[in-house]
Amino acid sequence: MAPLPEDDGRKPGDQQAWTSEQRHALTRYVDEQARDTVETYTTLPEELPP
Image (cartoon, rainbow, N blue to C red; front, side):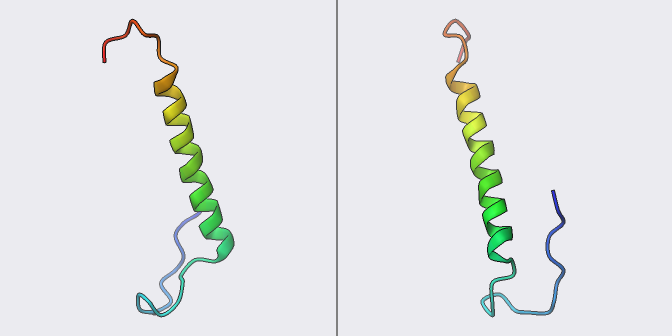
């Protein structure tokens, strides 16, 4: 939920903008959201229409 890093003037490709910890937190969050979504849709009752 933290804001994106401030623009420090670096150009794309100069250097990674986020720290290793920030990248790990972001990918962990996306993985958790994807896992929750898959779990939600794979545990729906079979009688529900598609």
